Image (cartoon, rainbow, N blue to C red; front, side, top):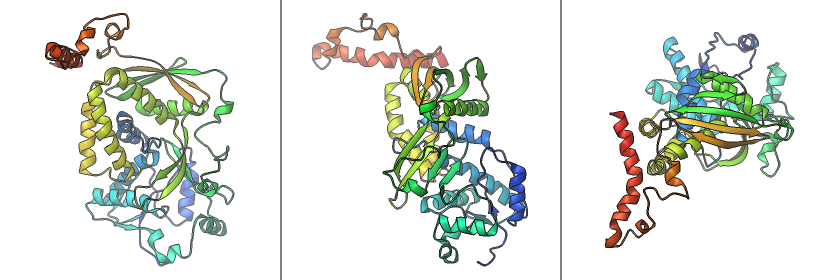
Length: 395
């Protein structure tokens, strides 16, 4: 292949990398300069927490770990490219149309169309020489390029703080179970601890602000996320094995994911909303905001006006999502065992009790007759009165 000049390549490094070895590898492969940027806190606060607020979940299963990471990676690349006045980006590690689109759409949005993108998998000189992963592995072996994949375990793995994804190899047969030794972010649930572990998670405006478990407490956004990953890993929480529909071309693809912290936080947040979020607001949010946000993130449209609009709607819906959730983790399961809120008053134990008729009369259910139209008003006014009391508190 002919030289394409100087480009900016994002190295997909793992969280436990030996960065001295990475620098050595970069130099050996011809890189003129290497910049290491810690984007973990930015990733948690600007991408993962909004996804939790939204209960984002593609096709009811996938927690979007890879899709959420790409905007952060692309933004860091563009900042560097604009600073150094480079004009080309490289996405050579990407093979499928969806992945190419995710990055290129981000580059174009962030640079105003001033950046060109080098995509080797669209270059006939490249894809005619390398038909797939086995050809690339053979080339890496021949050239002495160190890679973690082998012909026995040729998985395409995307590891970040949110999850690790696994594709390719024997996983391409959806009838076969994934190998037990494939998973990296979760231990085997079958051999997990013999006793459960309890954790408490506090939320403010739908965002986790404190995690407590077994005498340890975490309030820093990054630290609490790392702690939940570690706890979830020990108990084997967060594995999924799915066949998903790619957003471009209708391709079906089998993917396996383990996402401990995201699984725990989404379940806790979803449960707390049942206690503190108005039912009609929740219904509208689920129909329009959650679905739209999920589809936009999955389709590579994070840097778009419609995503900004949807996310601002989400912020409004989460104003009163304040409270605490208690969970139990045990051998792959994550169960809610309690929830409470000191500030939100939508739930009334007395009103919901089967032993009380406070603010309710059975005759009110005959609301459509002229005689009992007031009953219809009284029933619907229950939640509206509570909404009014909330607004009065904010004055």
